[in-house]
Image (cartoon, rainbow, N blue to C red; front, side, top):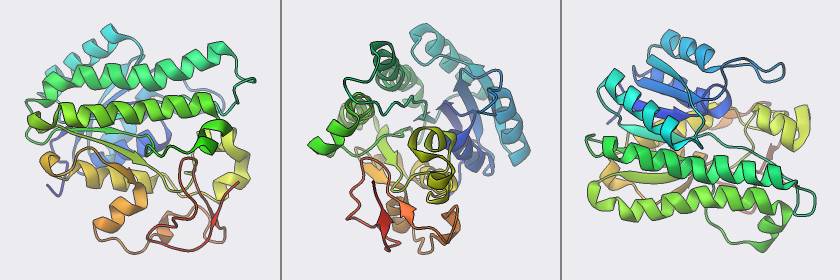
Length: 288
């Protein structure tokens, strides 16, 4: 497949940031996108709702279905899946984008916050992935794509932000297991992660403000990488932990300069990525 035209994507947490960018890239192909997120009213510091996302998707050439969903709620997710399948005639891909972040260390984090990030990231990914399986079985090219990191067991990465690492690795482990469990059904289960920080509100508020944004790539690189994965035959690509620029390099892309938020700045390597691996673009990466 070279296009997502007519395909239906169930996307969690797509009211802004990387999720919205992925939706807009698919919309330019003429895809159908269900935006399943909690945001129905814009936050003063975080603009964007499921309704503004739906409007942008329609303007980009796709069809949208905004759904107010808490991914932790099994019944709500199941109802949203059914509504999506009834509305568009099926589901071809599920993207687990919804995620909560906290980089607090063990003694600093409140247990309420710990429980929140585990329930959204791990439970939410499991609930959503599980609910979409019956619909994906009927698709000619079914995919589950989760935005979570490679399972590199480095103690220093765990020590820096143990609660968050547990939650993101938990998401990846779900894909690792489902890839094998669903292989015979031809359902691709993969993980996608950015090599560098991405210019989103999460990076601005959790990782270092405007200075960090200038050292980041734009969300478009993740959107293009997700698009490339979803266009691949599901039977040829499963059980993989992929970095965005590697995916695009494998698809033939050689120039990554257009993804830089500020071409004058060195790129900042994202967490869970080895800065010694500079990727297809090469060049020096900044790390903390």
